[in-house]
Length: 278
Ligand SMILES: Cc1cc2nc3c(=O)[nH]c(=O)nc-3n(C[C@H](O)[C@H](O)[C@H](O)COP(=O)(O)OP(=O)(O)OC[C@H]3O[C@@H](n4cnc5c(N)ncnc54)[C@H](O)[C@@H]3O)c2cc1C
Image (cartoon, rainbow, N blue to C red; front, side, top):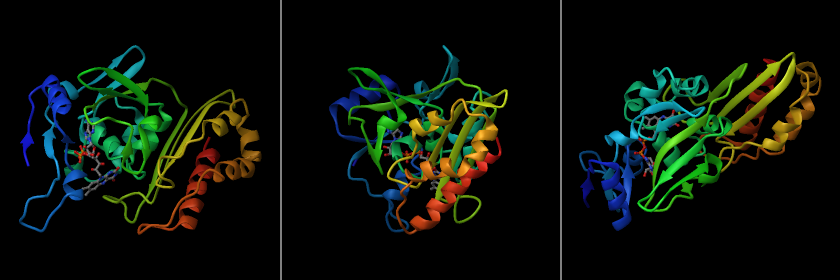
């Protein structure tokens, strides 16, 4: 098995086009998934392309009303960057630990495609677009079209996640909640992200998503649209109906971290708490 460290993005794309490689950014998921006995090296079944230090993938810029985040920006770099959306900062604050966050990249959190990936509910409701590059073309996909199941992505073997594009928006309320086995360094049993814009007591924008309650992040744009134009008071009067409608779309499973009844109850309670806070 080879470990290659290309110096440029172009070299990376040529290698990806010619061979069958596993892209490794910070390695905080991959090294765990491929670990071996102590004092032995992790076992990978493919050659590795190390992209963590590619300068062309490390940036954050604001252009054309969109934030552009290079895929190998680490969580720690994003945590302290003044351009990082506040909601993403709220999520990163309670992800992993500083040591892991110094290696873990945003592209890796997406690339791992875990329903419990904590940046994902945030990226879903910020309408993030993932920019994917290969030697032949650059294409853009809404994040919900990139991740199609646990660990499953619509990305080809010669492609790399280049950047995450986030359209700029203003919200009057934001919320990220995560329920795990302990306060820090825990994998989410349930996560919740919410944003809303309220003007003159009327809902102008409302987006919510739930992590770790299905094979992918759960978001329902039709249900969100139903509450646009309601007054905050109407929304609170009709809260039970709204919770029931969202509840129909939340169908968690049992696993080693939690069971479906707990997950569903907590997910709905987090939505309720967000609505009551508007
Ligand atoms: C102790 C510990 C605590 C953790 N806590 C959390 C937590 O609280 N919340 C959370 O969400 N995660 C957590 N994680 C998981 C992990 O840190 C994150 O998912 C991290 O963002 C992965 O980034 P990485 O750069 O290390 O990815 P890697 O391990 O390098 O890669 C992960 C996957 O993404 C692919 N990939 C990486 N970069 C690209 C790219 N540019 N283009 C295409 N594919 C790519 C890789 O091929 C691989 O399949 C934790 C991990 C550990 C070890």
